[in-house]
Length: 233
Length: 233
DNA sequence: CTCTCAACCAATTCCGAATTGGTCGAATCT
DNA sequence: AGATTCGACCAATTCGGAATTGGTTGAGAG
Image 1 (tube, chains in turn orange, cyan, yellow, blue):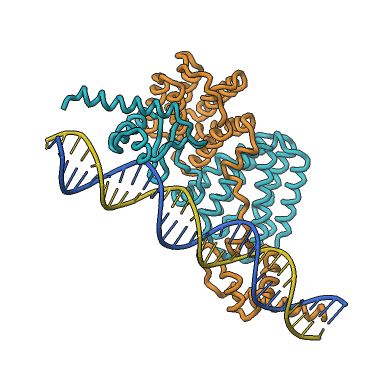
Image 2 (cartoon, rainbow over the protein chains, first blue to last red; image 1 turned 90 degrees about the vertical axis):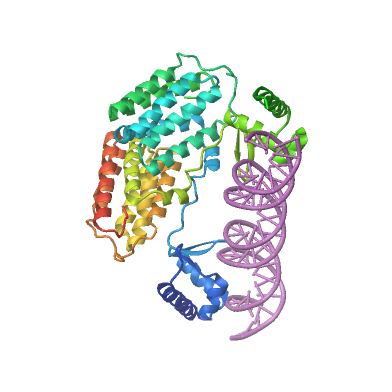
């Protein structure tokens, strides 16, 4: 057994594999044939093929996963954008900081791109929150108001980020107390704060919208720290 | 047919249903029995039960979905935070706008919270991009550099948002051309721009970090528009 | 003409079989 | 004896059809 010969034969299989990959037309997702098929096609045993594949994987040319297959390109990162997994690694305070960073910028963008239709819906949501007879109803319309701000950016990825943040919020504060069965008081801080946000967006005041949203979130945070119940904003 | 009698009988079924929901111990996810079972259990026809369920749904007490079932509580929003679905509704330009809104704020937060460990990793990534022999290698380290900025915020939700944005970027520009097999030139604009970003974070210059990231993304966008290939940044 | 109800429809879930990369031990070769 | 190979087996994933479930329709009862 000579190491040189071994390395040589191994490298030749790697070369053969590289040639195949350059020539073959592989499907959209970059998946290449299963090891069993590929080894037969190349006329080598599976063990030999796997050695070559191991080399290419070490080089970062391909990535593999049990049950999935072997693919070209860089390995996609583990989907940290999974709500359930994320919610277990974070806490309300951290989440609040993230909202404080993201949502003002969304409001800023919304001030630039909001259409009359969006403004009308914002007004309607605002009215509905005032009319709400229960906290559940208030929450429904409050959520929709904030989402309409995100929709007003007319930017699909941004809306997706907002939805993710919202889903996280629900997941994190899932075991929330419902110790406030009564409806929100007419002088709840959110009413005037929402008003300020909507007005700024109406006036195309980008800085104002961002500032108003930041102020609003700070109020929510203060309320959240004061009493654990009702994280509604 | 008397409307009063109809309404009365309907209301009674709704009441009966409310009583059942208050008494029944339903599973963790708030799902209640299928309509066929429930109608039999309550001794009413399915049509009658569905009328009552429709009333409760209109009130927002329950929500229903074909194939899933009937559940208590507010309807969860459609998971727009799904990468695959999201990538089909957007385009590179929109995605770029979203990055331009979000990532500078991430850099700003990172300037405040980055640890020496993060700074060291940023420096290492920067060095690796300069040493890169191929575009693929460059892309790997460039991606890691940007992700390290997000990690430096030490905010899990924020990191999740960044990962989502990144996943979207890959999905949207998936059918990308590889017309540039050569390695990046030593005077590639990203090198100095990355340097500016890292320096600002080192100096705890929040505004500077945000501005530098914005400038960098504008360069990337300009490059993206100029030539379709290599959307690397 | 209205209301009811069984059959049917489409979306979703469920579950077992097939697929696939990873691993181990016996067979094989030197 | 020692290293290598190769088939069988393992666990993760996907695939496909059957079952389930909310929604709809059209014939028939009242």
